[in-house]
Image (tube, rainbow, N blue to C red; front, side, top):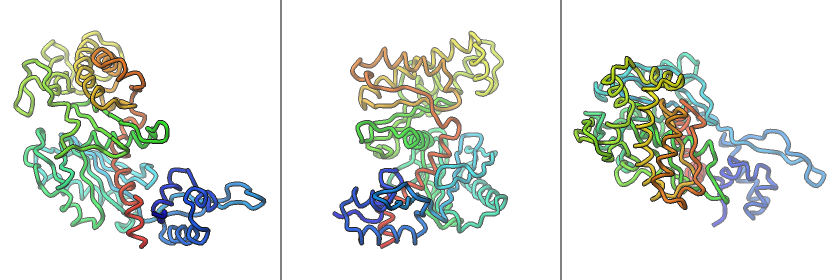
Length: 384
C-alpha cells in the first residue's frame, strides 16, 4: 500500500526523511503525490518548513519539522498522597507544573474534580485557552484495563475500580483522554527518549519503578504491553517469602518486603528515625550503614524477581526509576539479575538509571498522547 500522509509524517518525526527529495526516495511515491501529502500536513498544522537542508544538485532543499498547532497536553501523575500536574508541548517540553495535594483513598469523586480544577488553574496562569489542548493523560499507581480504560481492581486504590475517569475528564475537556499505569507511562517515556532500538527494530524494554511501592512497565515491539486486563508488570505482588502483610492482604509480596513503605517500616523497627523516602534517599547518598544494608536487602529481592523477567523477555534495556533509584539500589538489582538469570539472557542487557529522572512519568504521559494523536492511522483518518 502506498505511503499516506501519516507515514510521511513518521518519516519526518524520526528524522529519516525531512525534505521532499528524501521522502520521494524513502517512499517511492511520485513527486506530485509527495507534494500533495506534505502540503496537506502543512495545511493541517502538523509540520512546517524550517529552513533549508543544504544544496542538492545545485538547489537548496527545504527541510520540514514536526510542529503541530493546538496540541498542548495536560498531564497528571497521581500517587497515594500527592500528585503533580503539568502542561507539556508536543515535543515533551514542560511549560508549567504544579504540585497537587490529593488523597487517593478519598476516592475518585473527590480527586478527579481536584485534578480538573488544577488543570484549569494551570491554563489560566499560562494564558492558554482550552482549545489549545490536544489531549489529556493521567497516571495512577494501579492496573488499567486496556479495553475499558478503567482501573482494574487496584490493590492500593479502593473505590477506584471501574470508575469512569476518562469519561469524567472528557466532560471538562473534549479531547482524547488516556488513563495509564504510572510505571507504564514512565517506561514509554524512557523508551522513546533512549530510542531503544538495535539493528533498526524496537527491542524489548523494561522499566522498574522503585518508590513507595514497586511496579514495572514493559514496552514490546515499540508499544506498551499491558497484558489481558492491565496487570502486566505488576511485580510488587510476586511472592518472595517473608511475613510482612501487603496492602493486597497477602503476606510476603515483594512490595511489602522491598518497597519504600516497607523500608521505612523496617528502619523504624530498627530504631532509625527516617520519616520519608526523601530522607531515606539522603541517608543512602551519605552512606548511612543501616540504610545501606536495608537498601541492599531490598535491591537483592527486586533483582531476584527481575531475573525471571529478564529470562522470559530477554530485553535489551532495563531502566531503574523512581525515588529510590540510587546507585546502591541499582547495583544491588544488577547483582540480583546477573546472579539469577542465565548468562545468555544478560549478555546484551543494558541496566541503567532513568535519563528523564523525576520527569519520566510526566513526559511519558505526554508522549502517549502525542504518539497516539499523530500515529500514521490517526493522521490519515483526520486528513482524509
